[in-house]
Length: 157
View 1 (tube, helix red, strand yellow):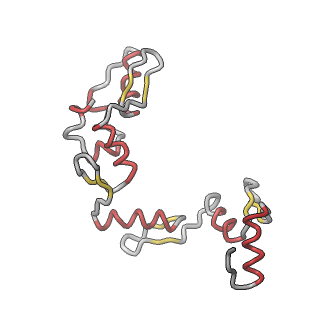
View 2 (cartoon, one colour; view 1 turned 30 degrees about the horizontal axis):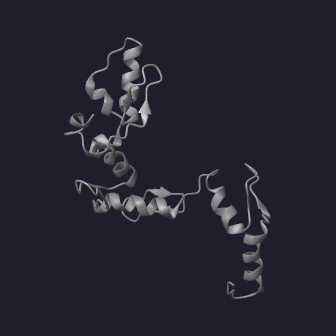
View 3 (tube, rainbow, N blue to C red; view 1 turned 120 degrees about the horizontal axis):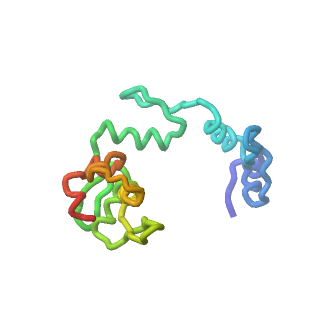
């Protein structure tokens, strides 16, 4: 049994079990069991960006986004590959990188069933079916992973 500080807190807590959602968004009709969650949600519809970076003054809607942003100023790479120990600043880039060490090829061409480790490579491949032949470096123009690790990317296709 959860210990609550007062009767009001107890009522709020009980809403989590009852499924009661008394607070609704006027824009998209999503409902919440607490007013604070509705207020937080409303930021996605508006321009409120209350979390500001002390270093560069860039603002964010969410505190978690500010925390991730702060790593850009520290130059820290907090996510490491368990195979080769290469470090990445963002978890998403590590997830893409790990495919280098595996046989996983999650992106398949519907026309010829050829599969690829990265979506950007599939997009370039699809051009070959239309007769358009892009340069090999076009594969990595939009790839954030390539920006961190372009030098050895071609040897891992």
